[in-house]
Length: 134
Picture 1 (spheres, one colour):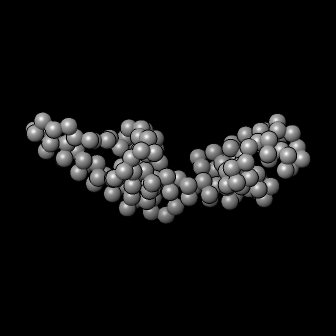
Picture 2 (cartoon, one colour):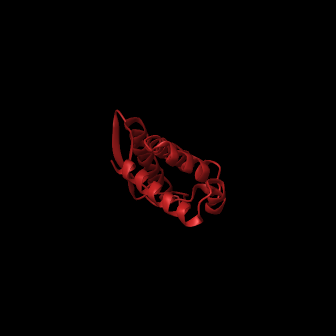
Picture 3 (cartoon, helix red, strand yellow):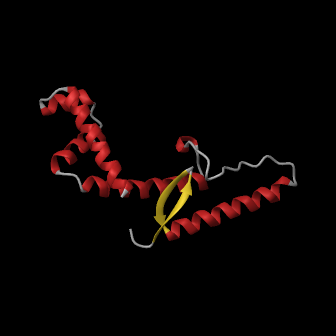
């Protein structure tokens, strides 16, 4: 991606646009300032450190929005990596992750064993992982 930078987010290094990185930095500073402000009032402040693991399934507000932005950026990178695969591997990816079929259902459709599907998916994961690491 053009105009990108790497930042630490939830304990892992991710690649994101400079605009998102600046937004995250400003957000972190604002949260730290509000923490200092409310500390003197003996109030419990719901403060979530962006570098700590966060389950977004039950969250709302700023941290949830930041997680959605980061997840969307990561999804774009995965889509680009999948686009580099050959057509057979892309079809397997669609069956497993877009149509959410089990390995047995995929095996039945393709007329192969469940073990063959498992091995193909393992190879697929390795190829996508390598493409993302590049």
